[in-house]
Length: 207
Image (cartoon, rainbow, N blue to C red):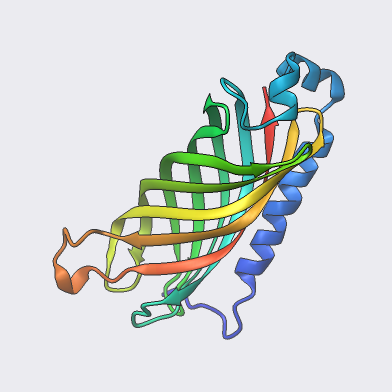
């Protein structure tokens, strides 16, 4: 049985790796490639522009905040996704998070798929504030959380901001809440859940 260390610092370390990876990708993309990906001025300057496509790369780290089960979980993820501007100020999002879940015992790896919306609520010339909501499903290599199931539903919500770093590249940061549970399909005694909140970071690359 895999045992978690006495002092768990892996989630923080993985979040730092995720944010560093996203920053390196953003800064390493050649300027001539950006010109090909974002030929129009609007998607390059505004990630919430209508009909704008963006690749999203980033990470999410969260600590269980309430409704503890038999353990206290910590979660950290590398996240890849796509966004599409449904209209000015409103994005459709699709993402594929890959979480490591520290469970104070048998840790787990969880892979999910989510879709949702991200709405701009305020903006200035270089930055914008937003709210978002996503739902999805996930599968894990062991029970998540303990006494639960390998299959779970996901619900995520949060708030944050984007800031323009260079043409067609925007940084993203905020707080995100994640809910993990199986919806009771395996019975009430096998439906513990995870309610966790933490930092989300990433980059949006227009194309």
